[in-house]
Image 1 (cartoon, rainbow, N blue to C red):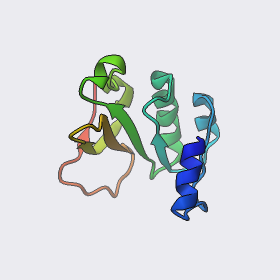
Image 2 (cartoon, one colour):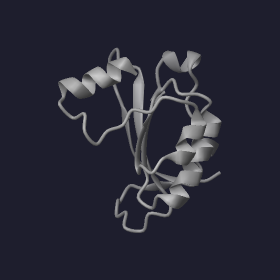
Image 3 (spheres, rainbow, N blue to C red):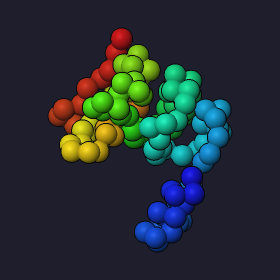
Length: 124
């Protein structure tokens, strides 16, 4: 959390971005519609359950989550597809080289104005 705050300070974008530290229950109290979820955030199942609840309130909810790839995925398994059921996967960025984080952009399924040719509705 300290590193994230330092990054915002160095980028001079400390206004408009809140870093929230806590368990998955803090999501119930958010009024934000843009969320970046750390790769190490746990418990993932409950976090995504609360994000689904939030998506019913926030019409334009977008979530970026980080997950591990490569050999690191053995230690930290990727997000199971049933956790993100009901969201639309807009994009996925798989890094190469020594970077082991994959970034995934989701949007809520209730977003009407999304016009993306490659959108994928994730279902069970």
